[in-house]
Length: 343
Image 1 (tube, rainbow, N blue to C red):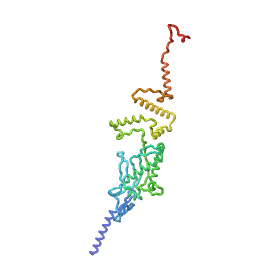
Image 2 (cartoon, rainbow, N blue to C red; image 1 turned 180 degrees about the vertical axis):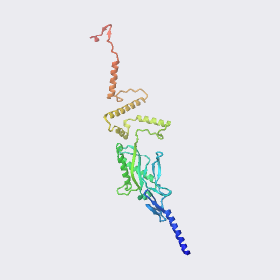
Image 3 (cartoon, helix red, strand yellow; image 1 turned 180 degrees about the horizontal axis):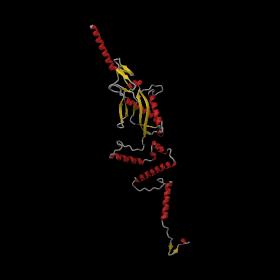
């Protein structure tokens, strides 16, 4: 009888130990979250469904030695950026829900060498079947940002700046296709690419074309009054910009000017040309006045000859002077009319 009690006690203890082991080693990989495991050889598997880790060498990837599964997202409270973690450092749970990555704005160039500042958004989710690649990527945030930058630069670099403004949707579709391709292919044909273990769903972006004519002063914050040194730098930059002529414009600036004239009617083009002409004459006058001494120039020297508007204005002033002047009386010599004035 005693032996039966002893055996029963041993079985009960073993049963309690097994239940305790199961309770501490039981994990459930759902559709919206999962876990990845490792052993002394590295990555083991990604969990799917209800699982008990019977192998004592197999453990959940978590803690300070786990890969940094983070990404940069928008902060709705401040409008800036914040870092969002996809892995719970305490439990090792990995979020599989779609997320929206928002890398910091970055600069790229169009096919005609126009600089644009891109603000991109990419919807993605962790691929449960490719958790091995997620495990191998030590810093997911940096790798994801670099891949997004590469995809947008490749698609935007195919278009000129005027084409980019009309091809937003095409660029976004091209970026998604390129990101998915980079998960499967390498740089060379037939080469297996380095996947991040991510499903890419959508992409969107906005861009601002860099102003080639803007004055850039280091340390000058928008909406803040400049210091005396910054104000002096602004004044020097403006004077330098004024001194520039047409031949000093860079190709990108000339292309921007050409874009302004595109698809305008004759009246709009004439108005723009007149404004450019007036600005050129103002630059000439300022350059002459800056010499500090009297300079005599002819209308031909400053480009006023051959301009219909100036000719008409000069003719109108001449007629007005002639009409306002009184008619001189005939000249006499002691009451006698000069011979040349006789009828």
